[in-house]
Length: 282
Ligand code: SAM
Image (tube, rainbow, N blue to C red; front, top):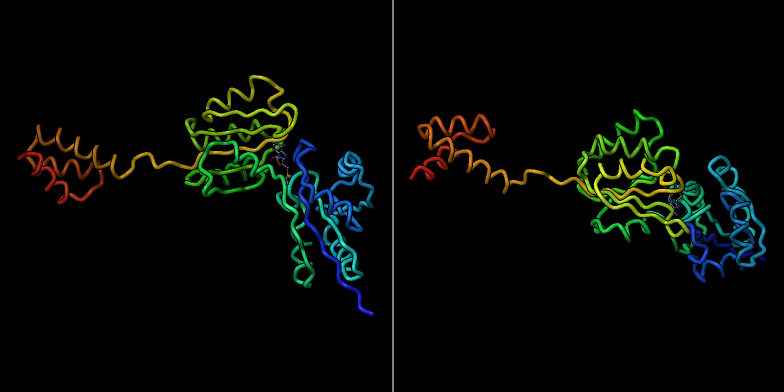
C-alpha cells in the first residue's frame, strides 16, 4: 500500500494584533498533524488564544538543516505540516527558505496561507510610491557595513524599506540621515497593529529629533520606509539655468567668449552653447 505524501503549509500569523489571523490559517493550524514554529513558547500563546491544541516542534536558524530532514520524513509518511514564525509571514527576514528549497526540490507540495507581514503593512500606510520598492530586511549591525550599504543604496530611485530593532534604531536613523541627506521623506512605522502603534511622517532631520525626544519612541519593532532618490537637477531645470547663465554672460561679453565661459561652468558642448548664445543675442 502506498501512502499519500503530506503537504507543508507556510502559515502567516499576526504581527501584533491577534485578531489579524485568517480563518484559513486557523483551520490549517487546527487540521495539520504537526506545527513547526520558530519559538514554540511564543506560538503556544497564539494557539492557546484560539483554543488550538497541537504538537509544536522548533525550527529556527540554527537547527533548520536538521529539521528539514525530519520534515521530509514526516511528509513522506503522509503527515501534513505547518510552518509558522514568531510574527508575520515565515521566510520574510525569518527562517525557512532553506527548508522550502529542499522540500520543493524533492517534489513535495508547499502551500502558502497568506496573511500579515510588517513590510506590506508599513507600505500600505506610508503614502510613498508603492508601484515599485526595494526591501533590504535588517540593516547590518556593524556600523561600517551599515554605512557602506547605505552609500550603495542612497541613489536608489524606488521607495526603500528596512526592518530595524530597538537596539539599533537611533544609530541607523542617524546614519541614514547623514548619508541620504536631511530633507529625504521618511515614514517610521513603530509597533504596527499593537496597542501603542506609532507612525512618524516627516523628513529625516525631523525624525532624528523625534526619536530621541521621548525614550519610549526607541522601544519596540520598526519598519523604515524611505522616499526614493530624486534627481535634484532634472534636464529641464538644467536647461533653464544654462539659459539664465548664457543670458547674463551674453549681456556682458562677446558671444564667443560667453559661450566658452558657459561651457566651462556647465560642462556642456561649446558649439551648442554658442548657437544658443547667438539666439539670445538676436
Ligand atoms: N516575518 C516577519 C514579517 O513578515 O514581517 C518579520 C520578522 S523579522 C524577524 C522582525 C522585524 O519585523 C522587526 O524587527 C521589525 O523590523 C519588523 N516588524 C515585525 N512586526 C512589527 C510590528 N508590529 N511593527 C513594526 N515592525 C514590525
